[in-house]
Length: 325
Image (cartoon, rainbow, N blue to C red; front, side, top):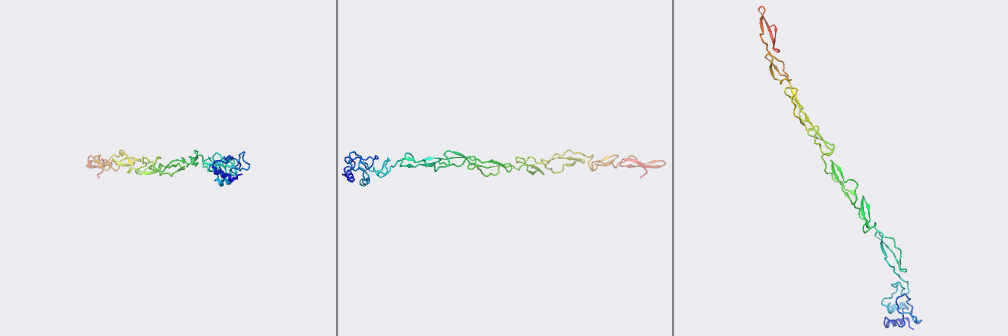
């Protein structure tokens, strides 16, 4: 009878590839590694791998007729029994992790005893959004979801209110909308202003005044002006002439014709009556005619050797009877 050790040594000495006569080769088919399957094998002839630990110790783990390293302690590649009769290990087909949700990941675990996967785990590590999605944001803005499942900055926002307004003297100031955050910049300086504030007034011309219109420009007319000098003056023979002041220009019109004149120029004199003279007074009227002479003799004989006289009235140029002066 061969002992297990002497059988193995004989097999190794012969060729290392052929079995002893009557020996069944090992093919890793899942049969009991310690059982001889030949029908005519003696009942007490040990199987080729009886005492696996000795076989590994003697041959380095290579059974006769098989390649190097074909048999190792532990599960076989095809899920069959191990060389030492331990539990089998089975593989699962498919992947152990997959993408899910918004850039997230879920995993599952292979049960090597049954070759089946566990249920997928919950989705973890997800982002904020689905790539390509968009949403409203800020003040009328939009933002889109990138490939990393994160929202982009909010863009194209709008600002509430007007971009320009009136200021100062009919001027304009502007401000700029920041579309990144929907807020206005500070107002600009007031530009394109006019000359004045509507309804205000100012002195002009010769004591006149002009007002500011709704277009912030001074009116072209300076109203209420005065003209220097008198509005009338003496003329001719105690006459009067006048001129009119234009209050919008502060200038006089031409003098009018001389009106209301008297008969003479004050101080002038002229002959009158009977050799008399008259003088023009301050009111431009002639004075009485004086220094007139009377015609005829101032006295004459009368009665019985008598004489009569008469007196000459120089103011009238006529005589009157009466005693001698």
